[in-house]
Length: 451
Image 1: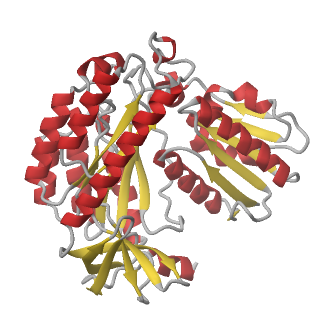
Image 2: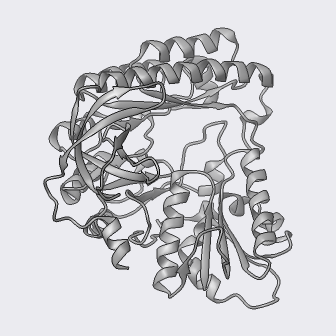
């Protein structure tokens, strides 16, 4: 069959969609874009907010309208907690939970024409083992995503994710290293480590594994490709992990550390496992230990009970710390969470005004951080995308800066060396220096061309 996949939500969902595509390819199916005619349309949904639920429903109905003869399959977090609601949408053939993603290819092969929607959604809270998916070697991207952990056993008061993903489950280290080697051998110059709650990796394993130990093992296996980490909670970054930046040259100098608030009382109401002072000390330690590191964070504005004084605490903390950028989210009441029924809900216009202030701060910090990199040379950046009409390529540095490189014939997915020459309000401009030394490594673009 011709299969199109639409992904909503987080990087982990994207990783799983890439792996599903690889699994279906192995079974003889052909991947097509969402704009092409498809026999099967898979929607990998999100449910982190009420708005995400609405977006998922809209995408399901759109897929049914645009592909009247196709079988529409819905999976992901919204499918996990609203299977009956989804199955009631005319045109849906299959609803599969997050726990069933690894069996999705088998479920699809069992579908019958004109039958009622099949619902395959188990109790995710009973999941105790990591369900592996194949490494996405066929994904047409310059960087590969590798999932090593699933689920979250924390209970932050604003978050529905433990209900949609279940408890913490980790992939065995040997299996992670095997999948990593497959991706590196396929030519990916960078592998991005993903998970629902990545920092809790290994806590469910009998071997006493940890995220720091896993990263050290992976960095040795990945060379010469580089490794990038996705979000880690501040209390999960210890000296062993910080030491990896000095020991290995292929660990990207980039960490995303969600603080959510800079006010201690708000953090307690959120049930966050760190304090604002924990975050401050970690950021200062990292910038001292790892020159040039880009540190990003998530902030929720307008959490119930956040007054002007609490917001100013957050603003002052982030203003004075060497943060590179902020991801700012307006608090959104999520049905099924503790925070949704808390008193002192913050008015929408107040939340919006606070978001504007923090986004302006983020813009200023991002430009200031990029300005510190002018004149710096980078031995290995990944060429990510080409704009043929403008005669340019975009390259991603290890510390998360997208650099515009003019007039080059280099291939997307190649590692090259460049220097940063200038920064504008929105762009960083660089000059290509030379091809990366290990030029014998095949690139993903080479692989796609052969396929």
